[in-house]
Length: 210
Image (cartoon, rainbow, N blue to C red):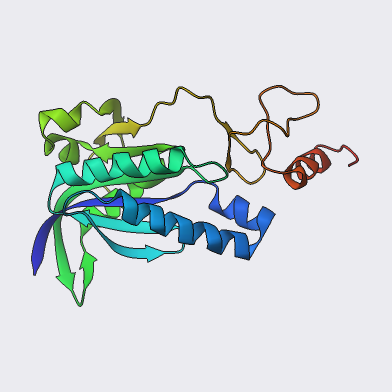
């Protein structure tokens, strides 16, 4: 059976780095928090279909509801300290449903678009963008065309991002967002860490004795 759905694939930027730095327990705790944030971010008839590790697959019959869900997901992760930034891809199209699994080229393209998005942003295809109401289109910025492996035509991409009045920093070791600037790099400005462990790790990598 085929269904026409809007698709959001998203995961956490820097998840591997965090796991290597803080260990499996911290990584698992972070995924639990992320899953809770995802559920809190769902708008209208959007629903979480699948979560594997730090990657989530969200569907909605309504592109507008899924665009609002994507906005909420960016907002709720962006404003959470000692957390990772999210990135993702949005697309819209027909999918085959079999045994509660979905198949089809739109899923593949959504995944490739997600991999193109930088930390703290969600990109969407022109197909998804054109399916939105005028009101929700204003949240996206045109990024230009991009080619993807095994996709015959280039895709026009649009970017959804969250602006913040308060400057935030990303720990260069574990990639977590840092709002508290109490642990700065001893000689370089605008580099801050979530903990002394990450500071010492960074200094050790640079050849400093800690």
